[in-house]
Amino acid sequence: MASSIKRLMIAAVVAMVFGACVVSFRGSDLDVNGALTQPQGPVVVTRVYTGSDGESHAEEMVLKMLPGAESTASSEQINVTGMRFRQTPPDYVFQGTAPRRMYVITLSGRAEIELADGKRVPIDRDHIVLLEDLIGKDRVLRGVGAEDRVSIQSPVQE
Image (cartoon, rainbow, N blue to C red):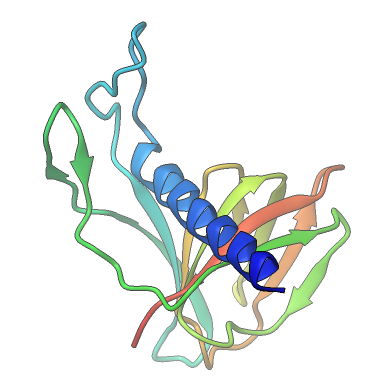
């Protein structure tokens, strides 16, 4: 029993580190020797929020990246309460809002978020979404394509 719990804890730590790498290295390249080179572009997050009209809206925001050692860059620390992996089929449809503020990072597969005004936000591999629309309405998340979507969900610490 104790060894099972230990294995689960190790797996959780590895998953958290892996998730941090996905966020940190998006837009960066490795050189021939495997060293991280300068980021190739901004790290973009799609923010889904509730507007003053009570409906869900989306905007893109660029994470402020601070220079680090050895050609790296990092954002400020974002405190999260945990993380989980989620796998959804291509025909998955969810209508509603987020249960809490959270980051969602798509590892594979595709989806789209349809907003009340009909705008569709494509969600592809490596896409980072910050869900903040806890009381908005008329938002639909649906799978797109033929493969399952695998994502990481990390609730933001309040």
